[in-house]
Image (cartoon, rainbow, N blue to C red; front, side):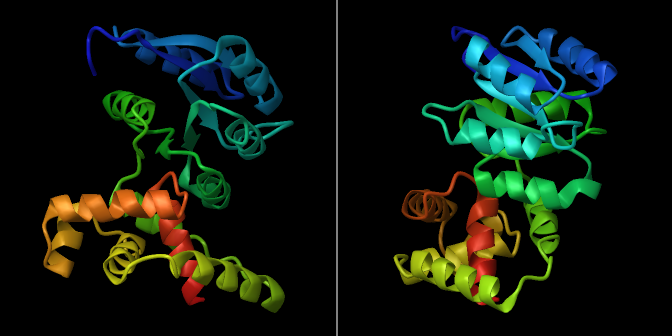
Amino acid sequence: MDSQRDPVRVVIVDDEQLVRMALRLVIDGEPDLTVVAEAADGDAAITAVEEHQPDVVLMDVRMPGRDGLSATRELLARPAPPRVLMLTTFDSDDLVLGALRAGALGFVLKDTQPPQILDAVRTVADGNPALSPAATARVIAAATAPQSSHARDSSREAARKQLSALTERELETARAIADGLDNPEIAQRLHISVATVKAHTSSLFAKLTAQNRVQIALLVRDADQ
């Protein structure tokens, strides 16, 4: 990040004090990042965001009281919301999936090494998704909860309507994203340049009003179910 920019303001949300302390030590040790508040549950997180107007919220998924998913949905529905980076373990894939549907830009596992957590915070602060293709594919694979026939038909119809606005190449790119491919792999599959893949992906974000690759992949999955 540009050293002349103000430090990225971070709110840490986790019900475990030791986790918050550890994350604060890691984040505050960087000149371009600063922790402006901590919160132990979803309600406190919303209050902290209102008071401190952070750039990034590092949000735990599972907490007593109001969980991170509910808090994330409320925050991201507001004007000019902060970027949200979920803090989780893979045993809460269902909640992570809900958060990504709501617009969270990514997630990091609680046992992630500090340098990777810092990279994720910076990536999300810049408005980019902090989701590796492998992680994206794993989250999509976790989206297997059974639905009623009515709910399935409704989500399929809505997804197909959104995807109908895409060009053939954009749809091919969306399907490749759903398969967990990164940009070079998509370029190889479609026999196009990486720059063209990036252009198609930017168009997908705009046309589908998606904020991350998982949201695109979920639409493809819903359309095909």
